[in-house]
Image (cartoon, rainbow, N blue to C red; front, side, top):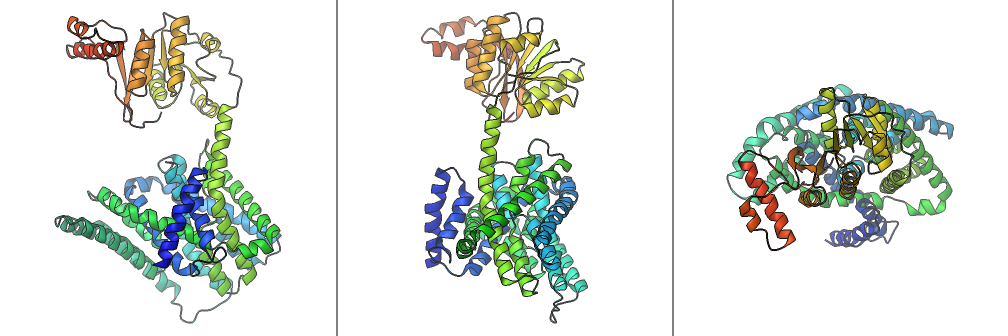
Length: 570
């Protein structure tokens, strides 16, 4: 009870402070662990017991992630899971093994240490991707596939350490028996997840006792984790497999809702336990060595991950991918312990590599913060606009989601539109697909003139920023009054601002993720009934005018649509 009180108090103090400082919750948990650990205030001394309990946080996290992935989606990740994971482990492993050999480490320790350091932290990387909403992006899917492959690769690596150290375990089972037990455990998880869990959940749901449902969900995850651990497999891998098998179940959302609070608490405890492993006495006695090893490890691993990202066709987010997987992994601690027991590592070598891995986990949030700031600075950096050398009947300003839909429709109809976009990476990518796209600020009159706005038949305003969208419409109306405009409205407020400020533009409103174009010109006539209702205030007139046009749309003459965008992105 005392340790629980200490952990909760440290988390409540450190995490909000870290969030307020803008360095993220993960770094706050790590700081809390360092504060209360054996090399901090020494309020908690048993790090191993804490890590055993905290590992359930990683297990629950992988179970929840598995619930989001149906087997068909997981099959679509097989390229990143098998090909990408193998290439990453080989590339990072070779670079790190070579570096350790150059450092003067004998080949057995270099081989084990390099491959262990090539593994990344499933907990750190996955939580960071979840916080940044990156799990459903190509970068997130590639990183998740590699992390799952690493979890699988850690098993033979741990098993090979005694052979590399020439240490025989007389009580160890033969290799064929261990492989058979592992295969039987995986088959058991598949049978339980696919055929037994859903009927059991239906039976429990009929009791209408939510606490019983929650208890069964925890029993399911913890039981599968224990089964996989007994078979010598990673507990998190079994939980992930069970989640995937239940992804198509009608109880998916109920399971996720019941598991989420426990997952958050135990995952926070895991990060605290990692902070507790940082040996500040070693850091104080050999600071130069630790800093050199940490910097060298991060530089080599980030460089190898950046190269792997190019092979995985991650074009725009190679640095983000590299930073997400730059840290050492949880399994590195296990491998280092096995290597120490097999006399592959000395006590001093194990301590140095352990603190490097722990500190690398702490650097990941800082690297991601630096990446975000660098990206924002790059976006603000001025680049001279391209010399627009083409004109077309349609100009598309902004090429996000809505602009791309319009562009594909026009291209399918053999209409070559001129695209203006301010994202240089987007411009470079789109030119490879044959689009006539040019870099520059679409609200600039000289750029619009060069794009042929004076002779164009239509301007599609697909700019994401609301203020820039309105500014474009105002400038086009003032300088090219005969040019019709189709504008994408992000929400109802944006719709009405376009309506008042742009009497000849047309709107497109987004509902959820589906864009719809409205063929109604703003500033249309009102019915006599709506005119009588709109004699009070300007706001009232605006509302009535919109309703009057809706009334006319029911008769089939025209239709105006406006709906709020529920967090939709271009």
